[in-house]
Amino acid sequence: MPRALRSFLSIFFGLFLLGAGGFFTASSLWSPQQAPWYVFLAVYFSIFLAVFGATGCLHTILRYIFSSAIEILKNRRTITRQSFFLGVLAVTALIFQSYRLLNTYSAILLILTIAILEMYFLSSEQSE
Image: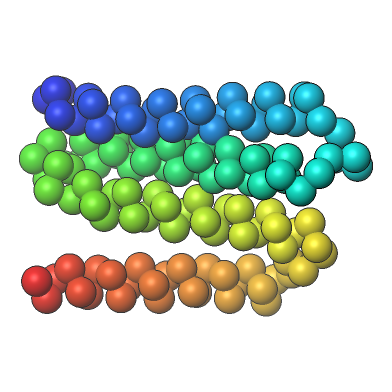
């Protein structure tokens, strides 16, 4: 595995560990019933970091197995963007669920919004 790829993978793994550690720290120190708003912000941000790091690691490893390392380094913006979108999707779904707004239709709309946004970015990359 090339050194640049290892550093790219270690950044994602570090973000995952930071997010998981932040989530477990915040959830063990404060009770959700008496927690102020900034605790919820910290919990959602740590969940975002954990999902972002985990999907980045998984995406990089799967691309390394099924394609070349050079292609991963060329497509690192795509990997980062897709990991960001999945992190935003997970946090948005959790926020909707906390307000009891997540049902089948809103979940489908969330997924379609992220998919359309990703298609826009992929088509704009192909035109360059």
